[in-house]
Length: 166
Image (cartoon, rainbow, N blue to C red; front, top):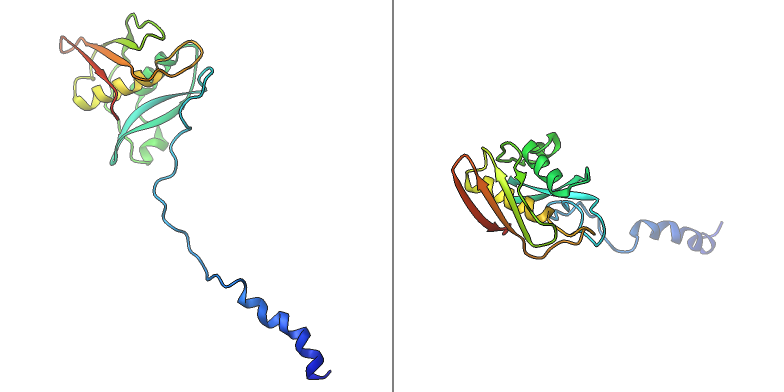
């Protein structure tokens, strides 16, 4: 075979390794993975959210909704603390016995809780307030914009009212 005939046949083989001109790429650090689903859409909740601490501060964690009471489910999950996978991610919680809703009218933007022991520290109170505020909503699952949480801390003999500021 002559060189003139062989060149057109060999040319694609010689140029193929050149590719499109992009060099090899390696994985690019992009920060932490997404945590949890986006904010609740209208309709009944498929998940409740509890708040635990990490090295970055207070973090929202999604948990499966075990109806019929999203506030009760969230408070029980908070009191149980982080599960094994969450602990492996560095999440910790200040926990105590689950607080009890005390006349929290649904959909009003106010939640009243009665807490027994374990919720006295600032960190524990912040976790509790953010978890309760996130779980509060209307019957159709619509989240409320700014929820005031009043906690009667029986072990301290005081009552505090806060809003969540994660």
